[in-house]
Structure formats: C-alpha cells, structure tokens
Length: 248
Image (tube, rainbow, N blue to C red):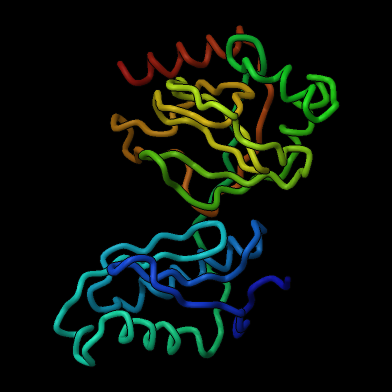
C-alpha cells in the first residue's frame, strides 16, 4: 500500500454500525499506512462539520462517525443516506496526508517478574528466551492507532510477527495501571486497574491518564512509541519521582 499523499484515492466501504453510527472501512488488516489513512480521513470529516455527527473515532482500519438525526441530515428522509453521500463527496478527490501534531514518546518498561508475570509463558509460546522477547518487543516499531476501552488507553500495533499470540483462554479480573499487555500483534498500556484478556509482558511507571496533568492523556493516535527496558529499581525510582511531581 502506498503512503497516502495529496490526491491519493483509497479504496473504502461505507456501512451501517447500528442506527446511529456509520463506519468507513479503509482496510481489513493492521498496517501503519492504513492507520495514517484513518487519521487523515478523520481530520477531513471533522473539518466538514457533518450535520448531526457528534463524535468521530479513528481505529486500526476504519473511522466510526456517531450521529443523531437532525433536520439537516434528515432532509432526504434518511440520515444514513445523507451522511453517506457527504462522505463520498469528501473522499472523491482523494485524501491528503494529514499533518498531525504527533510526537515521539519513550516508555520505560520493567519486563518480567512481578511487573510482567506472563513473560516466561510468552517466551515459551514463541520459542524465544525471555531476553529475546524483551529485545524484540522493545525494538519493534510502534505507533498509537487509537484510544479505547478506558480513558487514555492506547492501542499500539506491533509490527513484529512473533507477537501474533492469541488472547488468554480465561481473562484476568484485575490488571494494575501501567501494565503492558500483548496479544494478536497488538499492545495496550493500562491506564487504570481493569480486567484483561491479554498477556502481561511488563509494566511502566508512567501514567497513561492523569487528571492532575494539563493534558490528562499521555498518548494520542498518531504518536510513535519507543520502549526502553528498565530495572525494577529504576521503575520504583520513576514511580516515586512521578508521585512527588504530582504532589508538588
């Protein structure tokens, strides 16, 4: 797939997702170009101020437009038809690459032990040593594709195919904030204590979501992530330092 450039005309499909949501699908597999395409399309839809659309959500392969019926979008008798026509109009000349104010963020991770209780099992599953798993994870190019599941929770794809491991057979009822979990070549970092059906590889002392910060969400769609392995001692130090900064 080529990088989306000015005038790039992607193949897409529009479908109904219930009676108050339209999905615009740009692919069927996770790929950085598809993710960027979804971000670019989202920017176009937002700038168009589509009638009745109150939320636009990019995902790995599609963009969801949530709407309510209004006088404007019901003028032709069906909000879905009206919005679908507008979407086709917006995309007919192609999608320019969206110049998003993305950033690169280093995420320190303490792998294994109490911070990553599933590291040994993951290593066994993919026939690598724990050290090799850590190296492969920390060196895998990673981009935030979307936020979901909980406030500030980033969905990050891992390009390294060794992490195409299935979810747990039985979910865990509670995983702590900061847990770095993997499954199906995907990676999440938990913003708070939540149930989990993925495998816990490690933990970061950084907070994904913190209402005490001027910007509560640490990572946003389009951001690039670099993982840095750290020791349990550095983890404790960073956790303590972060607590002091919040209380100051």
